Length: 189
Image: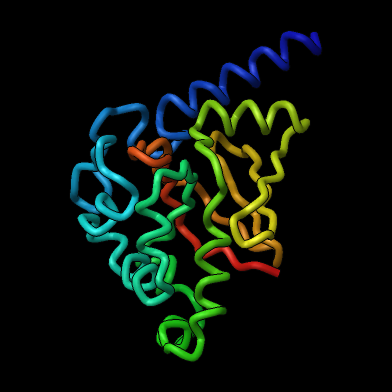
């Protein structure tokens, strides 16, 4: 019975990955739509992100932090990309404060906290969650950790402060990595 339950669980997890992690999203399409624009696996993370109308705040933040060249480099990177709505849900004035030149180190830390070195697409993430007994601890480029879990057919990412973000569009493949769109901004400890 236990083996059957594990097999069913793995099937659900893999099915969720193939279908955009259980959310309306990109699945494994070669050119998924994000923010009204096709995302091309031949373009890098920055070149795709600038076309998404749902990620204008993220793009502005990446530019303000001076991370454009890094995210255009060969990588590979896994980026948990918050939407404009995710940034808007932060306390009033947070984004404006972070974008000020004097707060560049803090902004850089927040942004690099959303980046995991390496290419961790849905199947790799599900494998790590399964191998970790239901959770995967991911080391971020900022030196912090994120914890990925599966619940209700969705992948959830928990930050150092206990905040959670749901992956809404998974497996947006880039020439230098993969993006998973998330509905909250993740905050380092």
